[in-house]
Picture: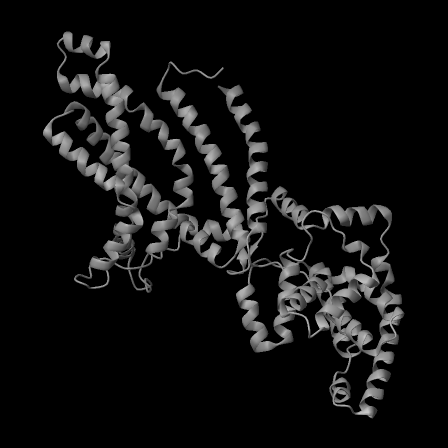
Length: 491
């Protein structure tokens, strides 16, 4: 048994790698980007500030990195000038200009040497102005930001240095656009002033770059490291190796802590539902096997099949419609795991409040489960009750309850006992449908809301956790099968 368990645990490593790779690929290929809606509103209200927020956000969540191979280290002056011309060409479609601007922004600090080279090579004042404006964005560094965690003293010191450097770029090195506005109106004096300002700022930028050149002097080994490891895929795996699931850009806290904070709610619902399902299904399945083909058993089977066929979201919606909103009754709470104000409640009152809020969700999570489990129990007991040793027990004069409970049930419910292992992901993962319908802030509702908000770190984190639990659940199921059935042996 120990050898079997060790082999299964080792097999989980490549399986988890495959799951992680698939999850990452699906999320990466998904349309849109995290926080795109918020950044659209920020740009509408705050102009350049919204664009700056978007840049910082993409850097913090590694969205500005290439996927597998970092070719940003090989950028040339021609590359950056091509994108600058496209972004400034009003005759081009807005989509092309936006994509060019986004690409320039994602290049970040990697584009600085190429921008400096373009500044030295270009003689057109407008092109040089475009390069200077782009330098003001790309030359800025982003400080350390650890959501929900305390920064170290070194990180705080480095952030202060970066802030001072960025302020210098915004003040001493920034291009004055007032002359450019007047020059566009045909003012020759403003045009001459604009050219002088461009030349002066270009000289300042060239001097600034000479002082910072060592930052971009990558040796052969360092250049290869950047190409291979400064990518989205490498950053993703580096976080997984450290068991760091990243930060949620919606909730502004670490993903692992966020999931753990929602875990008690989902476990409360799932464990309650599971216990009720087994308490109902096992006796009902045994009774159905004993009363097989009687009218009562057929009636019960018909009802169970009807319950099993009803989707849980449909039943949940009906409960809310007729028992929650006051048409015709207002009996059950329509949303939440507890009342909005539980501070004045005693412990017992709080327990009753939570219980009342979970009645409808637990019912919706239970009825389909016990309907299916009862069929498993009935099938298992029916297979056993026709066995030779059951007939032998009856021939010895044992009473029917003893024959059924002691001999038939013990072996007949082995299949549903082994199903306990496969319920582990459901216990921890919660019910996406039920929690979403009843607005219960558990893990199921969290993953649904994260998909809608494109909070990809949470989606990846929850999917990986559920994947691990599925593998553990299958292993537990196999072990339980060997425990309850002595005929099974793993060697």
